[in-house]
Each structure stands twice: as C-alpha cells, then as structure tokens.
Amino acid sequence: MNKLKPHIGKLALVFIFFAYSCSTVLWTLKDKTPPAWDPADHLSAGYDYYAPLARGSLKGFAQEFFVEPHYYAPFVHLVTAAIFLLFHPSRLTGIGANFISLAVLLVSVNWLCRKLYSDDTLPTAGKEISLSAEPSPASENNPTVKTNANPAIITMSVLAALLASSYHFSAWLLHDGFLDYPLMALVAASFALLIKADDFARWQDALWFGVVAGLGMLTKQTFAFFFLLPAVYVSVRVLWSRRPKALANLALAGLLVLGISAIWYWPHRHEVIEIYQVNKAAAINENEAPLYSIMSNLYYAHGIISPQTQLIFGLLFVVGLIYSLIQRRQQSRMLYLWLLSGLGAFTMIANKDLRYTVPVLPAVAILSVCWIGRINFASANKFRRALKLAPVALLTVWCLISFGNSQWPAEGQGYYIDSPRFRWMVFARNYFGFDHKPLPSDWAVPQIIQAVDLDWQAYQPTLPNQTARQAHANPPPTADETVSPTTYKAYDDAETPVLGSVVNLPQLNPSTLALYARLAAKERGAPARIKIDWLTAESSKDRLAGVDYLLIRTGLSHAEWLAPLERTAASIVQSGQFTKVAAFPIPLEDAEAVLYRRNQ
Image 1: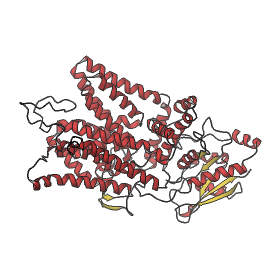
Image 2 (image 1 turned 30 degrees about the vertical axis):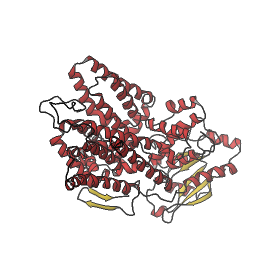
Image 3 (image 1 turned 180 degrees about the horizontal axis):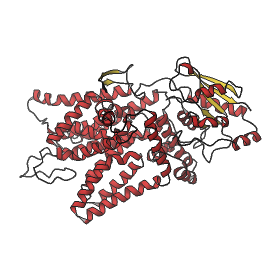
Image 4 (image 1 turned 135 degrees about the vertical axis):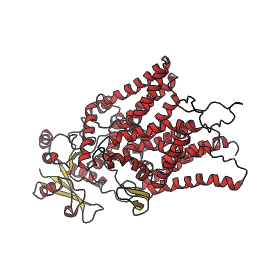
C-alpha cells in the first residue's frame, strides 16, 4: 500500500477516466437516437476523410482535404477517420475522439492546478512572479514552501480535474459528436504548455506549444478566442524582457501556429467566411438579444453559474474566484485572462450558444477549488481531520451525482429557480434535448436509408433516362441553406439515387440521413449509398424537381419544427408526380415519416 501512496493522484485520474468512459460507452450503446444536426455532420466529415484512405487513395484524400467544401476545421474529423480505419465506422467509434479528449482534459487540468498552486505560501510583496507561478525549492531560509507531494495539493488538483469533467455540459458533451469537447481539452492542454513555457526561455517548450496550439486551431475556428488576452500578456512580457532567445522562441511558436493552421484555412478561407455569415444570420433568425444589451452581456456569465455547471457548482466557483482574488491573485492571473478572453470574445458576437464557451470550464474548475491547497489534512485529531475532509468528500459525491444527472437523467426537468430574467438550474435535466437518458427510438432513419436502397435496386430507371436525370440534376445545397458535408462527391457512382428531405427535426433531418447513408456502405470505405439533398429552405424549392425520392411527414396541422417547404412537398406528393414507397412510425403524436419515389 505504501508503494501506491506516491501515485495516488495518478491512480485517481485513471479511475475517473475509466469510470466516465465506461458510462459513456454504455450510454451510447443503449441510446438509439440518431445524432442531431451538428454531431451528425461532424461524424459524416470524419467518414469522408476515412473513405479515400480506406480505399488506399491518397489522391482522393487530398481532394477531400483541400478541395471538397468543409466549413469546420478538420483535426477532430481526421482523428475520427483514423479511429474508423482501426475499427468499424459506427456511432460509438465516431465519438472515439472524446475519450482521447477526456484523458487530455484530466491530465491538463490536474497539471495546471499543481503547477499554479503548488506554492502554499503567499507571494512576497513586490517579488517578481514567473508566468508559471512555480515555487522556489525549499531551503533552510524558506522552510515553508510545499511541494507537489503535499496531500492538499494532490487532492485539489484531482478535484479540479474531476470537476471539469463532471459539469453538466461536460458530461453530456462527452457522448455527443460536437467539436466543443475536444476543443475544451486542447485549450486546457495549450494553456498548460503556455504556462510551462514560462516566457519562452526554452525552444523545446515553444515548439510543443506551437504544435498543440496549431492543432487547437485545426479543431475549431474559435480556439483563438480563448488566447486573445493571454497572447497579448505573454507577448508583452517577452518583449519587455528584451531577451533575444525568448523573442526568437516566441516567434517560433507563433510561426508554428500560423503554419499549421494555414494548411487547412488557406484553401478553405471562403468556407470559413461563409460559416461566419451563416452564424451571423442565425442571430437574427433566432431572435438573439441585441449586442451590448444587458441580456447579451450577461448571457455567458449566467451560463457558467447556471446551465453549464448548475447552481451549486456555480456558487462554488464564485467563492473560489473571490478567494483567489484575495489570496492567490498572482498565481491565478492566467486563469483570469483565460476566462475574460473567452467570455469577452463571444459576448461581442451576436449569435449566442452556451457550447461556445465550454472551453473556459477547466479554468472555472481550477479556481473553484484553489482554496483546498491551503488545508492541512495532517491533523492528529481524527475529528478535525474528518471535518477538513468533509468538503472534499461532499464535492466528490456531488461531482458523481452531477455526471449521472446529465448522462442518466430521470424523467422531467428536475429542479430550478426562476427569476424575472434568468432561470437558475439547481438540479435540472433534459433542458437542451441532448442531456437525455438513452432512448429506444431510432426515428426510422436506418430503415429509410435501407428502403431507398432496396427500392432503387428494384425500380431504378434505365440508363438513357438515368443519364438525362443526372444531366439535369440540380447542384448540391449552397452554404446559405446548410453547412453540412455534402454527399455529392466527385467519386460518387452516377447511379446513386438522390433523396430529398423536407423534414428537419432534431433527430430526423438531412444531416442524420446523410450520416446513416454513409454508415450503410457495404464495402470498406465505400461512398454514401444515397445522395441527400437539403430541401428545407425556400431557396431550395426548385431542387424538388431533381430528386428521385422525397421524404415528408404527416400530421403537419399540429406539427412543431415545421420546415418552410413541408406543406409544399405534401401538396406535390398528392399531385401524382410521386408514388408512395413506405411509411415509418416516428415518436410524434399522429405522425409518421413517409417515403415517396418520383414517377418516371
């Protein structure tokens, strides 16, 4: 047992990783719900990078990477493609990048906490503090300095890592294919490397930071938002030091970030601009609060305290933040810049989404428990020691409860407090539609893809008619209608049928259909079995004439999430241009999904 004591912190992190990973695997295997729009799109992009590699076509991969339209940076998609190559493409392997991200998140947050707060003494007034806030070695003249072997430091750093992975948003993002969970892990890792670089005295540290930060930029475009203020702060420090070696290392790190980013961003610069314009338009369509209004300015601050972490952990953060400002201000300054940079940048953007600021949660977790490092657990009095351990035990238990409430919630929305402007989540659940328990319905998405495939094999038109159909086929959707990866690939077989979907529900939409059209491929690395066309916006009305199959739903008189073209499509299928192929039950009242084939 004594041999394990020096490794107790590492063993705790390993236990958290396996416990949370096993829970997520079990949740994914039990849940039959198709991924929603964004997760389905990201898994589809991963498949598109995987497909040419699985066929051994480097030319096809280069075409996919540099030429095919992609609106999001590719690092997570490439990791997903690599996992698909090692295993079979599926929903479970599609979130494999999240398990890697969980490990990176746990290690990074643990290391950051130990590095920043391992000095258990207050800094001397007027003393220059390094970027890493690393303590000087203990000596006869400085006998009070504690090391990372301090039980309080180990407890604090493990709790910080546990907190960061147990928040409500962290827990449900772990089982979905969004980019935000890997982004959170890479932001935390990049901050750890930035602090380790300590004003870029060594070129090796600059190299590591530049590479990881470059991969962060290739994870999601918003990576840079969390480093705006820290980058300025570090650059000013290095410039002020006037050390040529540090200046050269800083330049090396910057060039690496720019060079790695440019590999993808330069050929896709037009799509990056388009996705920004789409998000800007979404702010109007979603009736976001006007920029710089009270609701807009407080949106993300409220998000940290309530929806993202829920109220108990939110209040813990407020207490930890106040404590750090009073007692650990010097050590916490990079965490403050991390928070201010991320929250400030997104506050000044009209389109709001609480997923965008999830990468600040590691800093929130560290600040929340920074006071634990000052507790002396080595008390001879058992009662006093128990009192000191009680907060740690309660926090650990509540972390596990918070994680379970997000991944395995009970029915209903739980407990919350409403105020005139805000809702305060106390022990809430099922409030975003993603934090749900495993559900049994697959919304007939796999069956729809299979039905199109079988019907096409039996009734596909003769070659002359098919050639004419392809010659007059409409182009794939444009970026103002959707930013999903298109199934219209250059290497597609001309005989692939086109399924148009006017249904745009969270679980049954063109993105989920496109994903399952890829997963239905019978051969390794084969293209999607069916081409999917987004027919949900008014601008796509003319493309109704170019589809072979059309998917609609019934029950439109009392339907929610009604797409603009759904009533138009319902009228068209009654005009005799289409023949009904099959109907599929969906978990909506008095509604079913209906598949139609165009008459020849």
